[in-house]
Image 1 (cartoon, rainbow, N blue to C red):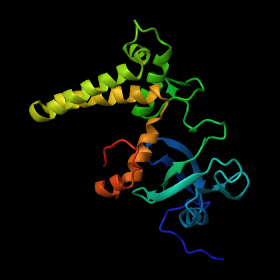
Image 2 (image 1 turned 120 degrees about the vertical axis):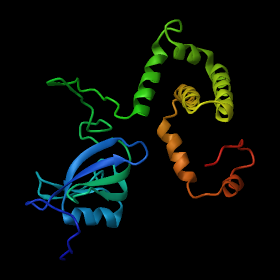
Image 3 (image 1 turned 90 degrees about the vertical axis):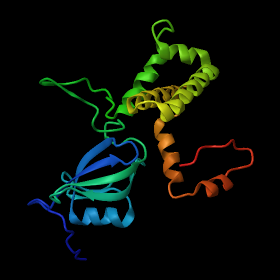
Image 4 (image 1 turned 45 degrees about the vertical axis):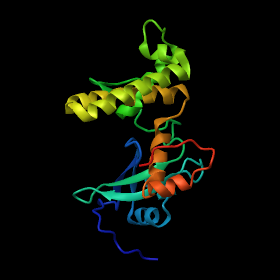
Length: 230
């Protein structure tokens, strides 16, 4: 069946580069190529579809491995010659088994060691805070919080949140930003202490989008403690 041509600029081989991005974290997962049919199939099914140049056929990411990529929307650049699959990736995206294909860094004229290197600031912070778990309490403030457990971490979060709240009313924008950074930092320590990834928080915020505060509250179980609503 003949497919009408999408308003995209394909190369001489009928291909267009596709960047796959985690729509929650902004992390780039992989880059591949797609044909007109592959992009149309992606839009129709919501599953990332590409063109395999080595096999000469369409391929749907994750059909065999289970590491599928759910595409929420297809973004097009200013020249319409490159697209982004804004996605919700499930599992690892790289054929090496890494979460992202971009796990190396160019250091001068050479590539850094083949180990996963966080792309985003939040990922860097999570990686750093995880590493602090094995530090000594004297050398690491973060490790001392871990050693203090939930009570110590919770107390610091309450303290920093109070300072942030007071800064909102009377202090400069710079102080507000500084106090907010303290709250976020200690929140991330609390999440890492429970091994809860920040992406899970973003998923919960996404779930609440478009839901009124009153409706969200009515949907909670009676035993659930109050939660802030976006």
